[in-house]
Amino acid sequence: MNLTARSYLFVGVVCLLGILGQWWGEPLDKYWLILTLVLLAALLIERSLARRLTLNSVRRVKPRGYLGRPLRGTIHMHNDSPQTVSCLSEDDYPAGLPGTRETRHWRVEPDSTLEQQFSITPQRLGQFQWHDLYARTLGYFRLAWWPRRLAAQGRLEVVPDRLHANEARGGTQEQGELERRITGAGHELLGLRDYRPGDPLRAIDWKASARSQRPTVRVFSQEQHLELVIAVDIGRHSTQQAGMLTRLNHYINIAARLAEKAVHNGDQVALTVYADKPSEVATGIKTIPDLVRMRASLAQLHAVPVESNPLVAVQQMRSRARQRSMMVLLTDLDIADADGQLCKAVSLLTPKHLPVIASIIDEEIQAMELAHATSWLDPYYTLAAMETGIATRRLALQIRRMGGHVVQARPAMLDNAVMRYYEQLRRQRRV
Image (tube, rainbow, N blue to C red; front, side):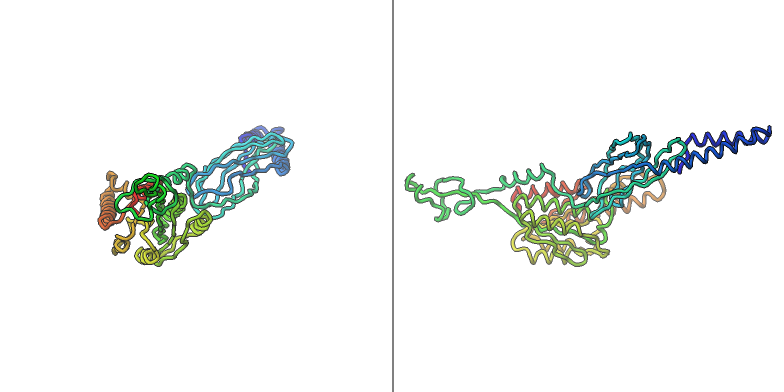
């Protein structure tokens, strides 16, 4: 129970009458007691009436949300009571679902419903049960706010992010751009042309050659497909916060979206996770059902409290890759490779495969490199940040010199950077 300003005013009058009654005696010395009894009786009546109010709340939101993507919903407050209800409610969300926390004011007429919007941004994967809504209703005499608990129903499932509609269409269009003309066998006949030295004899169209009185060959189109291997680092450093999500959750989103893009392009995908040892999660992902199973596996990933070893993961990936593949390692450049394991891993992949190292730029370290000193300790912090930045850039340069590719971006931009890099390499037929 929380008293309103009206109750405090009433209490002030009672105190004043009590003081005056001590000075002047009868009859004022009795009035304060009468008013106190009236106040207590009114509060008891309010409490009884507040318990009889029938107030229901429903939180309406999509049953599935995507990791890191804002999700909007509405809270519906329905009043089944015969009187108007004034109410205050306080938002409360499960851990991992931060949202707009505010005190909401409601004034609901009898047998009517009001709604207000809210927004959350899922930061963790899994199933979430909505918390009950805590509210306070204003009493009939407006003397106090009476607490009540409104039961919440429904669950929310948070899954890895996926492509937007325009991105999925873009992937299908790119597939057409990657067709190349092959003389001889293929999928679709593009046309006929004159024979050129070096064309295979099986490509000659003898009927067309007889009609034109010169050698003519058939030209077919053949789509270029590639094998994409995605390796996700789930070591202890992946639990570090990077923006709104942890590094591991960023990697999960990138892996899910990149695999979906590759399937739209007709490519084949394999997924591996590793910490101190590798674990092959899914292989031969070429269809939508395969992609659904891979996304379910990604939703179950969690960090392991051990140091990561990319070398053993790359050895397994290399032994199982049947042909030249694009291998994307989602890992950390700023804290990994203390003993050169990442460089050794890249050297194993080149020149047969195309390794791509995707890493998050630590915004806090970057800011410390450029920060102005305000205390005597700041120069030491800046020096440590500069050493970390120099080591990271040196490692990225070394990987590029070995024939690998490095994609670095801020947490919110790494996803799009990796997608653009994949499309660029595929368009250039680098794989």
